Amino acid sequence: MMVPATAVAGGIILGMANGAIAASFDVSGQTFKVGASRLVGEGFEQYGGMAKEKNGTIHPVAVSEIADAKLYDLCQSVNASVPGLKIVLTINAGGGGKPATAKGLLIDMDSLEGDATFTNIQIGRDATDLNEHAQPKSFGQSADKVVIKDLRQVARSTSAGTFTLNGLKLKVNVGDQAKECFPDPK
Image 1 (cartoon, one colour):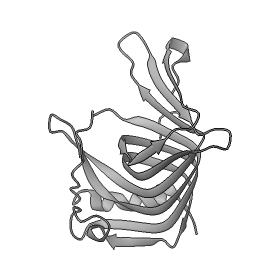
Image 2 (cartoon, rainbow, N blue to C red):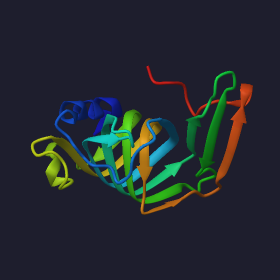
Image 3 (tube, rainbow, N blue to C red):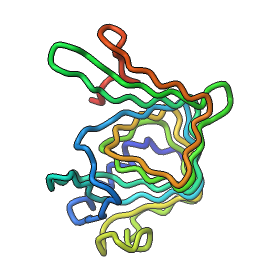
Image 4 (tube, helix red, strand yellow):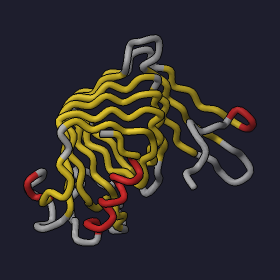
């Protein structure tokens, strides 16, 4: 089943107003971008939730849980610009056929784009069947497997039990070199 990731994630919006998933930590309030040529995940679940800043500001998010993930050609960027100086921190990993891997991956995201294939997907599940802390009767979906090609994600937080970044390259880019993983979503 081929489904554009944005169409599937669009259903999450309906349940976000009712979702109240407590984050395990306060988020910064700043988003970051994650791109990959391909994400392969086993044990996929998604539902609406909220990410909270330390000052109490709440951000509605789509929460994705992936039990076991592989990310090929991973790029993460954070725009850290200050007035008069463009600064972007980038992290690259998972190239050369050795993907970055994550176990127990949990992502709070604002947007997701790519070409997705889901295996044994169930759309419209009660989110509390996926996470006991979800709002009852809110929207959820799950799949045995997900493959997303040309992944472009804007996130507020990511956590994992184990995150292995093969070929890690971290760089602070300044001025003309300060480019994010991809342009802002439209």
